[in-house]
Image (cartoon, rainbow, N blue to C red; front, top):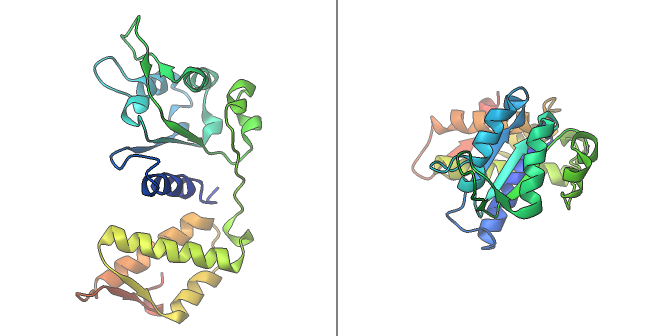
Length: 212
């Protein structure tokens, strides 16, 4: 856990929008499958919606659905997803005779390979499988690129330019993050929030004393 699965899926979505493969107005929706481990009926209702209110497949039409902790999906939930991937269609609750169509990119994340956690038919419908290394298994260049990307993303979210001292940058790179990328992101958020209190009109600057 914490290897950056949700971050990667979000970057894939943003890249698709930048390359105009995904429309600018399309949605990215994230689903925590553990919330539905004991409630597949609610999962089905949220996935397919009703004839009056669209579910995830309707809302994310043309966009992306990210299923985190996919190993928590029940067999019935997997069958629903397999049916959609096979036909591109789904049937909302209350639409007894009419199927709806949508085009949604589905991304599944798990700490284990898909063939170990999903039924064979559904796993075979997943054309690409990516294994992400932990943060501490990544090269120094990869860590640096990731840290720069997080700083820029947080700056965009806050609407400011973010600078960081070389000493603080090196310290953030060399720290052994036990919770992997999630802890690194939390560190960036905390530093930016602290530095924001000293914000000048041109942006914020992170120094050693801002580190948690």
